[in-house]
Image (cartoon, rainbow, N blue to C red):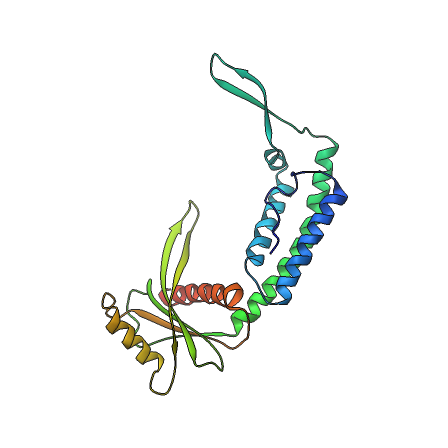
Length: 239
């Protein structure tokens, strides 16, 4: 996927028509990805640019911060460098401000399309525990299957908690382990038992089966949505 540089507004030629061409080309590529239900990395990229544009709209000083700096003079005695902005508040800045206001609704529209696809897939995902769920659900196995398929992809997962000054966040890390077949004799419960026997460091691992009733690309959509759905499910269990 062709991405948009984080500093696309201030890089290269600062011309409204040129930047408009760059933006529309990017969005055309994004919509090709979305039409194929490939959400990532397009969804995350849209969120980044939309938030960045809104910040720039609401805080004009951030526009200046995006410009490169050049040395105006050097104080060799104090070994200090004094910088000044290449661009002042002139016609160039007005062009960029016009681009910001032009771009926000366009990227916002594509972002809304991506959210709708995300929600449609998430609503077609079912999560259920496999066997007895231990008190500690931060580590375990995730069985990911598509409806009408006997194969399930086995991942290990690890949920981590990180926080900033305002709130706490949950993140999840997954690693592919193997692909197994679910049959009358090899159920999800039997698969969990076999894994427990093979990997004895987890005597009773938390295990969840996730079944998707919609067809969509695994790496670009199903897996990242399943990961986030599992974090939400476990958070609700702990609430």
